[in-house]
Length: 423
Image 1 (tube, helix red, strand yellow):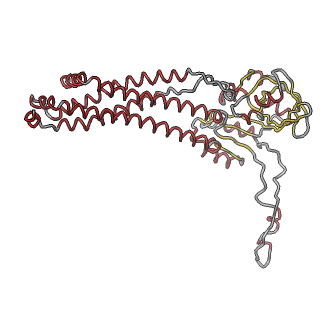
Image 2 (cartoon, one colour):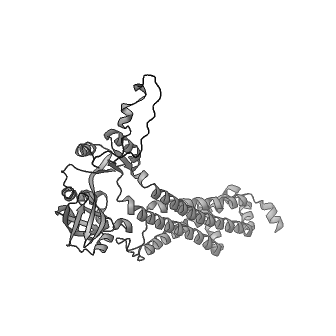
Image 3 (cartoon, helix red, strand yellow):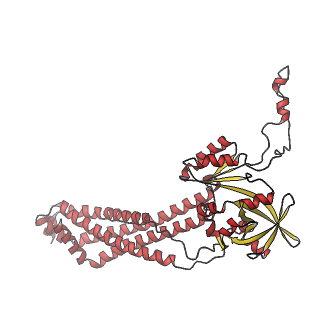
C-alpha cells in the first residue's frame, strides 16, 4: 500500500496543475455548501424565532361559542310526537353563552400539569382588551398579563425588550411595557404615566417601564405587557382569574397529540404550536430543501471535474500504466492507484473547503445588519452547526470516490501488450 501511495503521489506531482484545479473545485464546493447552509439555516432560525420563540408549545383557552343544543331542540324532539313524525327546528342568529372568557379551575389545571413529566414549564396568562387614552384620541390595545420570570426563562422575553428591565415589570405595581409602535404613536417615554380604559369603562394610570419590539409592526402597535397581578387589578378580577395557560414541553413533537388530550381532559380549547404556525414550518422546509439542493449540485459538479481530469490523466499515462502492469502490478493495483489519486484530491479539497467555509461564515457573521424591525440583531445570522461540515465532507469524499472509480476501472483493464506494441 505504501508503494501504491507513492506512485499515486508521483502521478499527482506530474500533473500538478490539473490536480490543483480538481482540488480547488472540491474546496470551492464544500466552502459554498457549508457557507450557504449555515447562512440559510441561521436566517431560518431568525425568521421563525420572531414568532416561534414567543409561541407556547400548547395553549389552553376558553373560546366563547354557542351551545351545540338549543332549548327548543331539547323541549321538542322527535320522541315528543305521538305519531313519530319528524320535527325540523329552524334557528337563526344564535348568540354565544353569556360567560366570561376565563378558564375554570385554572389553578387546579396548572397544579396537575406541573406534575406531568412531559411538561417543562407552565405559564398562566391574562389578556385584556383596553383603550389607551391620548388626549381626545383612544388607541386600541391589548394588555397581556404574564408571569414575567417565566416569560424571560422560557419565551426569551428579555431579547425583545429594546428598553427597560423586565425585573421592573415583575416587581412593580401598575407598570406596563408598551409595544414600540404604540409607544411611538403615544410619544410615551419610560417613566411616563399612560391612562388605560377597560371594556367596562374603568380607568387606571400605568407607569411605562420599557418598550417591546417583536419585529412585526402591526403586532407592536397593539401588544403590551404587564404582570398578571396588575391586569387582574385592572379588570377587577380575583387572583385565580386567567384566560390562557401556556405550556412548554420537553419534546416539541408531542404537542399535537397532547393538545387533543388536554382539550378532552379539561373541557377547554387547545392549540399546539405546529397547528398555530404551520406556515412558518412550511417556509423553513422549502428554504432548507433549496439550500441542500444547491449545495449538493455544487459537490456533484466538482465530482465531474475530478472524473474528467482522471480520464485525461489515464489517456496521457497509458504507457506508464502498461509499464506498471509489465513489471508485475495487476489490474486491482492499478485501480487502487487511481482511486488513491481521487481520494487524495478529495481529502485536500475537503480540508481547504472546511477552512474556507469557516472563514466565509465568520465574514458573513461580522457584516453589519441593522434594521428597525429587528433591534436585537446587529449582524447577519449564521448557524455554525457541525452537521453541515460532516455532511459536506462525507458527501465530497463519496463523490470523489465515485468520480475516481470509473477512470480507475478503465485503467485496470488496459492491456499492456497493445500499448507497448503501439509504442
